[in-house]
Amino acid sequence: MKIAIIGTGNVGGALATKWVHKGHEIVLGVRDQQSFKGKELLQNPNTKLMSIVDAVQQADVILMATPAMMAVEVTQSLGDTTGKVIIDAANIVMGRGPQGFTNVSDAILANTATRDVVKCFNTTGFNNMQNPTYGDTAIDLFVAGDSDRGKAIAQQLALDAGFAACYDIGGNDKFALMEQFAFFWINLAMFKGQGREIGFKLLKR
Image 1 (cartoon, rainbow, N blue to C red):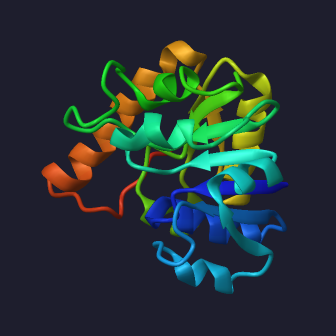
Image 2: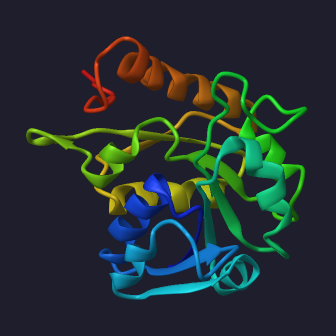
Image 3: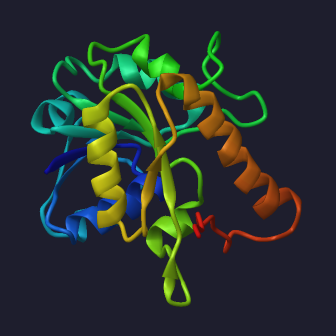
């Protein structure tokens, strides 16, 4: 699969590295090709650097891992997204997000052509994307969106990143719930002193 990574910081970098080692082709889409975070990612195999528009055109799937406040601006810079799947990994935290929207995914949908927008990779820290395994158990992820195609791709990419499972929690109406769940992790990790090395696992019996 050809994947454009828009946002080459901690989350985008961790997933780019995991996915390229599972055989995917990675295209880093950046505004300034001379100065950008994550230059070390170019040392990975099957990884290219392009403008944002060119990266999107080369890719089947787009990971949006940019700050929530930049969601509208970045989405509008993608160019034609017809036929593409967009995976949104961002969260509005402490009210810092796109004006007029209660979650990032809705802001993306309002500013792009594709309807295949799903939310995933937002409910845990980048450290858990680098290593989702605790002892002999891998933690889980979750995905939401109306796009069945997008959810299927996100679920496969979650497995390729080493997560045990990626559970479908519903449609676009669950975007806000996903961000609330993300803040639950942030609250525990940052504000309640549990630290970043925590993760969620769905247990069944």
